[in-house]
Each structure stands twice: as C-alpha cells, then as structure tokens.
Image (cartoon, rainbow, N blue to C red; front, side):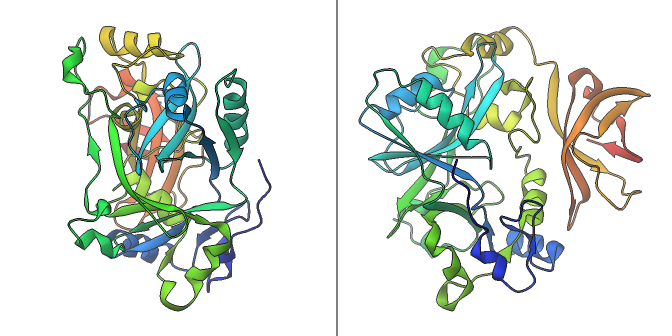
Length: 358
C-alpha cells in the first residue's frame, strides 16, 4: 500500500502522536476525550486505515462469492462488515463495506490493506472488476453525536442500523433473510460519503472524505472536538469491538467473536471459502475459545501489554489483545481465552500482576 504522511490533525493543540506517528494517541486529555466523545460528541481521526475500492458491475456478486456476508442485496448507500476466511475457516481479513451505487469501498486495519489487495487481485480471474488502493486519496474519520441530519426524520442517516438476530443451531432457512446481517444506512456527501454504524454509542458515523480535506477540521465552522486513538480504544473495548490482528490471531474463527458473528457473517448464503467450518461450528458445537472483555483490578497503573498471558489456577488459558484505561470503568481489556475457562461468569483470572473478572 502507499506510504502516507502523518495526519494534519497532529497539528492540533496538545496532540501526542501514536507510535507509528500517523495519527494522534491523544490531544492532551485522553480521559476527557473519552467522556466527551461518549456523552456529547467528538471526531476520531482514523485516517491510518487502509482503503480499497472495487468497481465494475459484477463487484458485489464477486465479493459475495469470496466473503462471509450476503452482499448481493446490499443497496446503494448502504454499508456492512465482512470477513474473508482461509479454507479451514480461520479469519484472514476483515473489512467494513460501503457501496455508493458505482463503487464498493472496503476499509481495513492499518497495514492490512496490502494483503487484502493482493488476495482480491489473485481472485479476479476473468471477473470484470477493477481493484484500487485508495489510501493516498481518501481517509476515514468517525464522529459521535454530531450529525445534524439525525434530527431530520426523512434523512437516510436518521435511520438506525439494522441487524438480524443470530439464528439458533439447525435453524430453518426462512429464519434468516437473504440480506446483509447488519445494514448500516449511509448518504452521499459533496465528496465521499457517511455511514451510520452506532458502533460506540447511538449516533456513531463513519465518513470517507478526500485526504486533502482532513486539515479543515482544525479551522472555522468545521472545527469540532478531537479524540485520539486512546479514546477510540477505550470506547470500542467497552463496546466489545475487536481489532483484527490485535484482538484476534491466526487461529481465530468467526464464532469466537460475538460481534463478527452478528455483524459480518451470514449463516445461510452460497458457498465461500471456509463456509464448512462456520456451518459445522454453528450447528454441531462451539468454538474452543472466546473473545471476552475483562475488568482489571488496577493494581498495576499500566494496562497489560498485547500478548500478556491470562491464567486460571496457575495455568495459561489465553492472552490479552488490547487493554486501556477507561474514563469510567478503569482498566479494561479484550482477551482471547479458552471457553471452558470462562464457563463460570464469576471466574477470577490473572493477567500480569492483576486480577481480572469478566
């Protein structure tokens, strides 16, 4: 993927850069930023995410055949999520999706776009689609609670996202509609688009805009409160939202992640790579691991690092994905653990020097 210069929002007062120097870790008050973003509204600079476009009349049918989501029924200016699996059902790619009627846009984790782009290119065969890395030209931001159109009942973004319930094992096909399991309403902008996800709280919106326009959020009528990646991680962990490759690993199957199973997987669609594993786990058993949120006791002032073991009765049962200090909940983390270890909701776990509970 294209190497991208640091975000112009790093010029905001108080900005402290992330380790890779591309966006802001915080703007001087990480806990205040979390509170403001959740209670009143703020803008998260997510311009480090990789962006891919797919054009051509066959784009949705083609992506439908490759991934876990039901995409042939995705309407113009709607979004969703999808996964691409290995032949054995392990999650190899995750992407948020938006179709504007002519182009399907995929945004994925920073640094993961190149592998996704290569995979899509390999799977083109004779399909008439064009795939392009758009990261140099387009950037993603997320706002909470700040879209005036939400008050306009006839505006597309006034409609809350729709999600089908996850069906029980051995369900009847009629129980799951032939549409995406999660539908995020969207609307075109002067340049780019907006997509309502309600991911962090009701009134959470993603926006794709020209990268050259990022700096306008520092000035004039476009200036709004900014929140860094620390605040983003705190609110998404509290909401149970994983980061692919951070809170998951090479062994992860969709059933380990409750959010993905509900939002990115359609359990009754045509054949795709890894479908056999998804169906088998859903109908015949449970995944051996789960992604869970942990509350830490705070005896160590620093949240545990990525990969820190999680143990039960002296035996390692999992590891930390991402951990953070939350403005209200204290230290929280997402961790992949053995399902058998957390069968009791009152279980007491240990990670690093801290006790942890579900």
